[in-house]
Amino acid sequence: MANWNETDRRPDMTSVPRAGDPAARGVTFDAGLRKHMLSIYNMMASGVLLTGIVAMLFVNSPLFDAAFNVVQTPYGRATQPTGLGWIISLAPLAFILVLSFGGVQRFSKTALQAMFWSFAVLFGMSMSTIFMTYTGESIASAFFAAAAAFAGLSLFGYTTKKNLSGWGSFLVMGLVGIIVAMLLNAFFFQSGAMGLVINILGVLIFAGFTAYDTQRLKTEYSYVRGTEYAGKAVVMGAFSLYLDFINLFMFLLQFLGNRE
Image (cartoon, rainbow, N blue to C red; front, side, top):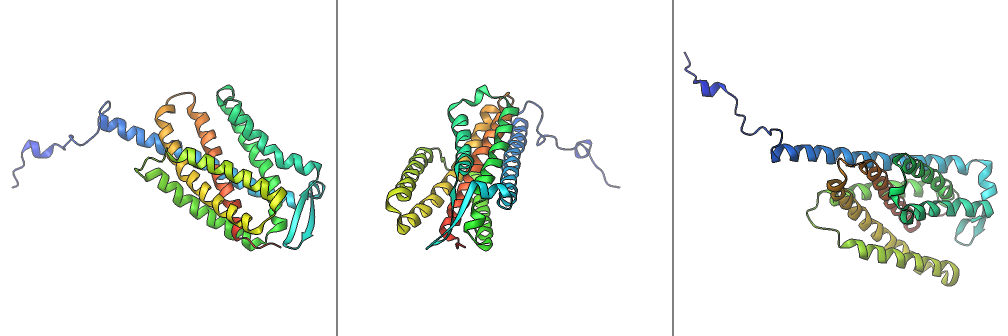
């Protein structure tokens, strides 16, 4: 007969985290962080989906013809906004300015969510023009390329041990530079070569923003967890990643896309 000691029958409890232990707090933190980031990704993906649906519905509606005139150019079809088109195109910028300079603290979580969904709808209406200027194959290819790049870059930002906080100032300066270059090229130079360079730099800048913002949101959780700001942080995090993805997609489309 086997002769087991009583100590052999008792399970080893030394490796089980107990409430209050650092290990237990670490497990709880990791679970909370995963839930927090998953909420951000779910909201961001839902916003992108809503934008795409609105864009496809709007381009086939009579309201599109009242907002944008489709013209033929030597480079293919292009759209020219009417007064209504300018309102639709500039409305998303108003949301960005309100959120950037209005102070997130003064808005409730519900108000921020309403602003996010409204922004996604308006951006979808303004993005509807791509269906008139680019082929369906180009739009699909750019979307899947952007999705793959976004997933890889966001995973890198989430898992890397390298501190990416130093990227922020350079990325912002690069973004400002691109905006200035786009305005100059649109109104003065109208250079195809310059446009190509701008699109390549745009892809690189928003690739950097994707990794940078992901790490920033991951780090931010340490400060917002358990506070009333946690819900707002989810909305603002989704808004940041939404802008990263949409801009990455748009620059890839302009860089790789074939015009109608």
